[in-house]
Image (tube, each protein chain N blue to C red):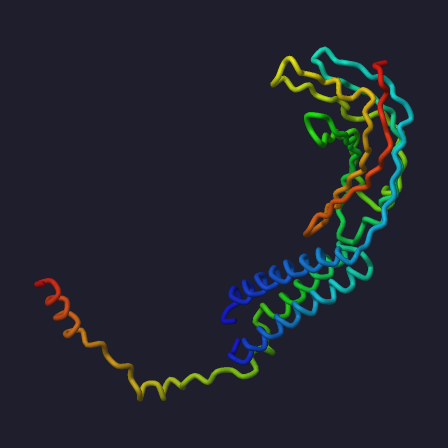
Length: 177
Length: 95
């Protein structure tokens, strides 16, 4: 600790190292939080269901999404990214996931919400062109699908947690309308 | 600063930083405010800097005793042997 600049350097270095340790501990404290979120998505209406010119099936839905994600927030949470995805299986692919809606929740007060909306992103099933004779985007007719509410808890420092709630029992009509 | 003062300054700095970190984390965690933790810690760091970095008088309580000038004259510094040094240089060149 010979000179002013030596001591100043020592203080700064040690302070920053301790800061890193504090942030690590803050992130670890998130593990003590046991969240209990609830969610419910209702399909209020199938607005239309068509085959597009490029061969894909596309459907437009009106959804009512209500959720209580306030137990996900801790002192170390910056924001929660939440999205609703439709999941279904086809003969070509066991799992298809299409994101229908997403949002960012920035505080615990906004985490208990209710939104009535059409799907923000297009719900389409894409035709694969590798075997032109079999190119069928006909997969959505009469299809049963799950709607899953996923969330990513984005921290101020440290580890990000992600989880989901799966809701089953939705299906699309047999014929185009 | 003298030697004792330097040691005191170092120990004081380490203890103050750790204590302010622990206190800041405790308060922040209990209140549930990350911002409070950061502000409290920043305050602690500034306080530590103000106390340990500048050359305060209380760090100079055991000053070093330098020799008086009259004492130093009686014990002159040894002279460097310049003749021996130059002959060494000549030997290296001939190699």
